[in-house]
Image (cartoon, rainbow, N blue to C red; front, side, top):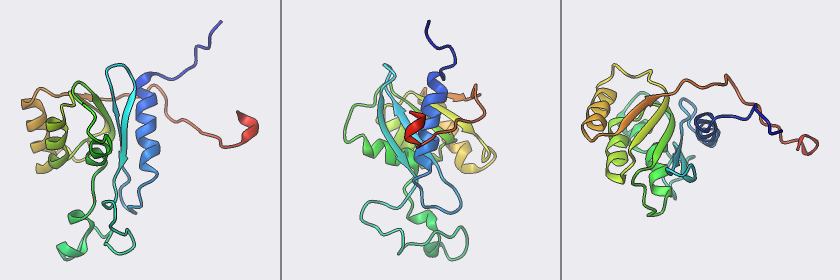
Length: 164
Protein backbone atom coordinates (compact mmCIF):
# COMPACT_ATOMS: atom_id res chain seq x y z
CA UNK A 1 0.00 0.00 0.00
CA UNK A 2 1.39 3.45 -0.91
CA UNK A 3 1.98 6.28 1.53
CA UNK A 4 -0.89 8.68 2.00
CA UNK A 5 0.96 11.43 3.90
CA UNK A 6 2.93 12.80 0.93
CA UNK A 7 2.80 16.53 0.23
CA UNK A 8 0.67 18.17 -2.46
CA UNK A 9 2.22 19.62 -5.63
CA UNK A 10 1.46 23.16 -4.42
CA UNK A 11 3.13 22.60 -1.03
CA UNK A 12 6.09 20.95 -2.78
CA UNK A 13 6.73 23.79 -5.23
CA UNK A 14 6.10 26.49 -2.63
CA UNK A 15 8.55 24.62 -0.38
CA UNK A 16 11.15 24.73 -3.16
CA UNK A 17 10.60 28.50 -3.50
CA UNK A 18 10.94 28.96 0.27
CA UNK A 19 14.11 26.85 0.31
CA UNK A 20 15.57 28.92 -2.56
CA UNK A 21 14.80 32.06 -0.53
CA UNK A 22 17.25 30.79 2.09
CA UNK A 23 20.06 31.52 -0.44
CA UNK A 24 19.29 35.26 -0.34
CA UNK A 25 21.80 37.42 1.48
CA UNK A 26 19.25 40.21 1.95
CA UNK A 27 19.04 40.84 5.71
CA UNK A 28 15.48 42.18 5.47
CA UNK A 29 13.56 40.14 2.93
CA UNK A 30 14.30 36.72 1.52
CA UNK A 31 12.17 35.65 -1.43
CA UNK A 32 12.42 32.62 -3.68
CA UNK A 33 10.61 31.66 -6.86
CA UNK A 34 9.96 28.31 -8.53
CA UNK A 35 8.75 28.11 -12.14
CA UNK A 36 6.89 24.91 -13.00
CA UNK A 37 5.72 23.46 -16.32
CA UNK A 38 2.18 22.18 -16.94
CA UNK A 39 3.66 18.67 -16.51
CA UNK A 40 4.76 19.54 -12.92
CA UNK A 41 8.45 19.74 -13.81
CA UNK A 42 10.60 22.44 -12.27
CA UNK A 43 11.83 24.66 -15.10
CA UNK A 44 13.76 27.22 -13.05
CA UNK A 45 14.41 28.58 -9.58
CA UNK A 46 15.56 32.00 -8.35
CA UNK A 47 15.96 34.13 -5.25
CA UNK A 48 16.48 37.83 -4.57
CA UNK A 49 20.08 38.98 -4.69
CA UNK A 50 22.69 40.99 -6.50
CA UNK A 51 23.17 40.41 -10.24
CA UNK A 52 25.84 37.93 -11.29
CA UNK A 53 29.25 39.59 -11.07
CA UNK A 54 28.16 42.27 -8.59
CA UNK A 55 29.62 41.55 -5.17
CA UNK A 56 27.02 41.41 -2.43
CA UNK A 57 29.75 42.76 -0.14
CA UNK A 58 30.20 45.93 -2.24
CA UNK A 59 26.56 46.93 -2.78
CA UNK A 60 24.19 48.22 -0.09
CA UNK A 61 21.50 46.17 1.66
CA UNK A 62 19.88 49.13 3.44
CA UNK A 63 16.14 49.83 3.13
CA UNK A 64 16.37 53.56 3.83
CA UNK A 65 18.57 56.56 3.20
CA UNK A 66 19.94 58.01 -0.02
CA UNK A 67 18.43 56.03 -2.92
CA UNK A 68 21.86 55.08 -4.30
CA UNK A 69 22.76 53.67 -0.89
CA UNK A 70 19.72 51.37 -0.62
CA UNK A 71 19.29 47.90 -2.07
CA UNK A 72 16.34 48.81 -4.28
CA UNK A 73 18.30 49.95 -7.32
CA UNK A 74 20.56 46.90 -7.30
CA UNK A 75 18.78 43.75 -6.13
CA UNK A 76 17.36 41.38 -8.72
CA UNK A 77 14.05 39.96 -7.46
CA UNK A 78 13.44 36.22 -7.20
CA UNK A 79 10.85 36.13 -9.98
CA UNK A 80 13.12 37.89 -12.48
CA UNK A 81 16.06 35.73 -11.42
CA UNK A 82 14.01 32.57 -12.00
CA UNK A 83 12.93 33.81 -15.44
CA UNK A 84 16.52 34.69 -16.37
CA UNK A 85 17.82 31.41 -14.92
CA UNK A 86 15.51 29.54 -17.30
CA UNK A 87 18.18 30.29 -19.93
CA UNK A 88 15.79 30.88 -22.79
CA UNK A 89 13.52 27.89 -22.14
CA UNK A 90 9.94 28.39 -23.24
CA UNK A 91 7.92 29.45 -20.19
CA UNK A 92 4.56 29.76 -21.98
CA UNK A 93 1.89 28.03 -19.92
CA UNK A 94 4.14 27.68 -16.87
CA UNK A 95 3.21 28.79 -13.37
CA UNK A 96 5.37 30.51 -10.76
CA UNK A 97 5.31 29.88 -7.00
CA UNK A 98 6.40 32.75 -4.75
CA UNK A 99 6.11 33.44 -1.01
CA UNK A 100 5.42 37.16 -1.62
CA UNK A 101 3.14 38.67 -4.27
CA UNK A 102 5.26 40.00 -7.18
CA UNK A 103 6.04 43.68 -7.68
CA UNK A 104 5.12 45.60 -10.83
CA UNK A 105 8.54 45.08 -12.43
CA UNK A 106 8.40 41.32 -11.90
CA UNK A 107 4.81 41.31 -13.15
CA UNK A 108 6.06 42.73 -16.47
CA UNK A 109 8.66 39.95 -16.75
CA UNK A 110 6.09 37.30 -15.80
CA UNK A 111 3.69 38.52 -18.48
CA UNK A 112 6.39 38.85 -21.15
CA UNK A 113 7.77 35.37 -20.43
CA UNK A 114 4.39 33.70 -20.98
CA UNK A 115 3.83 32.48 -17.42
CA UNK A 116 0.07 32.09 -17.01
CA UNK A 117 -0.37 31.54 -13.27
CA UNK A 118 1.07 33.14 -10.12
CA UNK A 119 0.67 31.21 -6.87
CA UNK A 120 1.64 33.21 -3.80
CA UNK A 121 1.63 32.81 -0.03
CA UNK A 122 1.56 36.41 1.25
CA UNK A 123 0.12 39.64 -0.11
CA UNK A 124 1.27 41.84 2.76
CA UNK A 125 2.00 44.80 0.47
CA UNK A 126 -1.42 44.65 -1.24
CA UNK A 127 -2.20 48.31 -0.51
CA UNK A 128 0.98 49.67 -2.15
CA UNK A 129 0.93 51.24 -5.59
CA UNK A 130 3.55 48.73 -6.74
CA UNK A 131 1.32 45.72 -5.99
CA UNK A 132 -1.86 47.43 -7.17
CA UNK A 133 -0.15 48.12 -10.52
CA UNK A 134 1.17 44.56 -10.58
CA UNK A 135 -2.29 43.07 -10.11
CA UNK A 136 -3.76 45.41 -12.68
CA UNK A 137 -1.24 44.30 -15.33
CA UNK A 138 -1.37 40.60 -14.47
CA UNK A 139 -5.18 40.52 -14.56
CA UNK A 140 -5.27 42.52 -17.79
CA UNK A 141 -2.89 40.00 -19.38
CA UNK A 142 -5.05 37.07 -18.22
CA UNK A 143 -2.55 35.72 -15.70
CA UNK A 144 -4.35 33.68 -13.03
CA UNK A 145 -3.62 34.77 -9.44
CA UNK A 146 -3.97 32.18 -6.68
CA UNK A 147 -3.44 32.82 -2.97
CA UNK A 148 -2.11 29.56 -1.60
CA UNK A 149 -3.48 27.96 1.52
CA UNK A 150 -0.83 25.34 2.29
CA UNK A 151 -1.98 22.01 3.68
CA UNK A 152 1.08 21.95 5.97
CA UNK A 153 2.26 24.55 8.45
CA UNK A 154 5.92 23.55 8.09
CA UNK A 155 8.26 20.99 6.58
CA UNK A 156 11.41 19.94 8.39
CA UNK A 157 14.37 18.80 6.28
CA UNK A 158 17.09 16.71 7.89
CA UNK A 159 20.60 16.45 6.46
CA UNK A 160 21.45 13.50 8.71
CA UNK A 161 22.50 10.48 6.65
CA UNK A 162 20.77 8.13 9.07
CA UNK A 163 17.42 9.81 8.35
CA UNK A 164 17.53 8.88 4.66
